[in-house]
Image 1 (cartoon, rainbow, N blue to C red):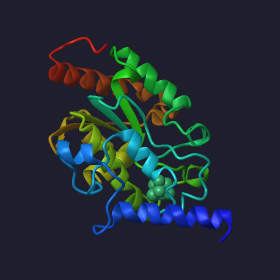
Image 2 (image 1 turned 135 degrees about the vertical axis):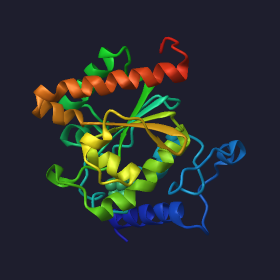
Image 3 (image 1 turned 120 degrees about the vertical axis):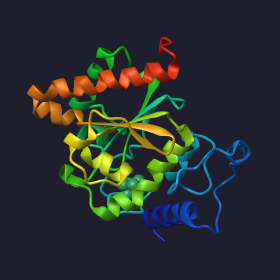
Image 4 (image 1 turned 60 degrees about the vertical axis):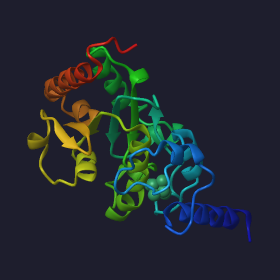
Length: 236
Ligand code: SF4
């Protein structure tokens, strides 16, 4: 078996382990002991930490995006974050660097956080898909269905009280709704003991600067929710 074929075979069987009821993950005793609540659809055996989970799936080739990516983009931020942002999929810059939201949209996200007195130290940022669709095309349903358990597992490990969906696609995947943005944003949506906010993806505001005020409204609501759950304590 060639080196590449061997790598793909190892990756296949490694990922098969994650999804087969009859098979178990490598030792993850702390997760079993803590009995963290696992979200429906997440891996049945919860990894002990985000780092461990990233190591387990970083070679994933379960959907067609695996072989076309440059870098796997797991997520970045505070593993004990009170707020998790979810975007759609890595773009060009993220695919090169292996880090979500590092391009212009990511810079705008940082600015919007700063405007409400927050920054990346208190949040975690990831995407529904961990690999970039070629030429930034829309994700295929099979890609979303294959990758979604990874997102739900990340959320099961972090269990943030607040989730922010950046864009209708992320909201659709997480909440299972086809409702338009005008019905989703500006509201607090309950989801598995978590409060979910939906706002536009920062890339939308880069294309539609006159709508930036909507994002600013949504981030002020985010800060209000954050203050409610922290009792107004300073975030740093
Ligand atoms: S997009 Fe998700 S399921 Fe597809 S190869 Fe990447 S990590 Fe695996």
